Structures are given as C-alpha cells and as structure tokens.
Length: 259
DNA sequence: ATGGTCGCAAGGCGA
Image (cartoon, rainbow, N blue to C red; front, side):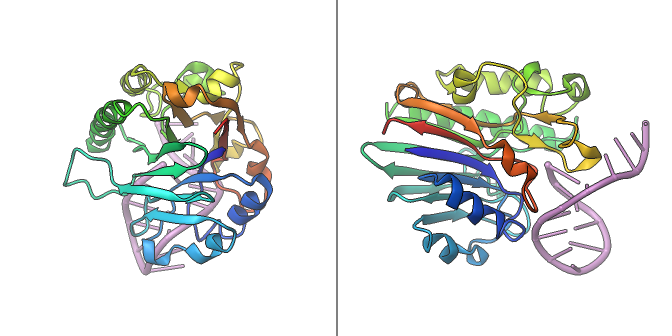
C-alpha cells in the first residue's frame, strides 16, 4: 500500500497538477494539506472519477485537510481533540481497509510565526494536543500513520541553511523538543529510516529563488507506529514535482507498506 | 535588515 502526504497550497491552484501527479504516482492513499476550500467547494467528483474515495475537513480560505483513498475508508474523524474552541481545520483521521486495517491521520501543524506571540502559543498547544491524541491511538496497537505538514525542521541536516532558521518557529529548540516528544512516544520517521543521508527536502519557498538554489527544508513527515514501521518497505520524496507546471511550494512524500 | 512570491478572494492575511 502506497500512502502519500502532499501540501498542495490551494486546491483551486492545483486543479491540474494534483490529478497529473496522482495519475503518475498512483498512490493508494493521499493526505492533503492546505486545501484552502470549504467542503462543498472541494472538487470531489474529479477524484472520485479517478477511483478515489474522498473525505475532507475544510474551511474558508485557509488550512483544510483531506484524505483520498482507493480503498474504503471507515471511522472518519475530523478535528484534533482537546480544544472545543479551536475552529481551524488541521486534522483528519480514517481507517484504510486493505489486506489489513491501517489508521491514517492527516495533519497540518500550525506554522507558529511570528515568535513570540499567540500564533506560537497556538502551535505549542496544538502539539501538546497531538501528543495526547497519539498516546490515545497507540493504545489500540493498530498500525498508525501520522502524515502531513508538521512545520517542524527536526534536525540541522533537514535544512540547506539551518543558520537561517534559528529564530524561526519551524526550528526553535522548543518546537523541535515538542516534535521529539511526539516521536519518542515510539514513532518512526519513515524518511529518516530509509534515507539517512542529509540534504533531502520537501519544501522550497516561492521567494528568492529557493528552488533554483536548492534552499529547502524537510518539514513534511510520515511518522509510523511500531506496527506500521514493521510494514515499511520504502519512503521517497517526489522532488521532481517542484519543477513541474504551477507547482505547490511543497512536494509529495510517500511510503510503501507491506499491507 | 529588508524584500522577495504565491493563494484566496477581492483587501489584506497567511505562509
């Protein structure tokens, strides 16, 4: 089973590039972030016609996540538990029914800039809520995949210019510590496990020729529970997508599971 | 230190 994560930065802007990538990469499951659309405006028929079940958790203009799956989805849940006042659409879960059931969580973790301020406080609070949700799900002992745009650069080797990020919410020690606390619940960073060499990125800013200079960062991650990590066969970044027509500033990252 | 570029949606915010 091939499971991908892709921050598309707006479904309207990616209405051609996303189907083109799906047709070429043929993932079984895709978690999308920043659909920037309400559920009613999401072009679900386009993806249904390509053989995907479509579950969205959108909102007007910003954020928004979705899961596309060629396999049936069960027990869909929307929103990260722990704060009923949180109206931002950043979390969706579903169980994918393949040869075995896999719980897939698609997430769009808050950016957190500028620091300090309420946006950074929201990021850290959101990460604490995610820590709690991961703890809860781990008790099920199901294979779990937590994938999405984490807006965290885990280590210096995950940035072309780590020194440029030292005061940024994506790389501050507190951000990386909160990320590490989640990983240390017992999750495996699929890409790091399969591609230990530095210099692989999933995001290049639109500004200042970041792509042309390969000034990237790795912030899109697939974290696997032990039961899912046992099934891990491969993990790749589809870097070439960034050089395509009208690209997102992120590229897809995917895993192949023996399931 | 600043500005640089996109997307959404129709002015400015978010990244």
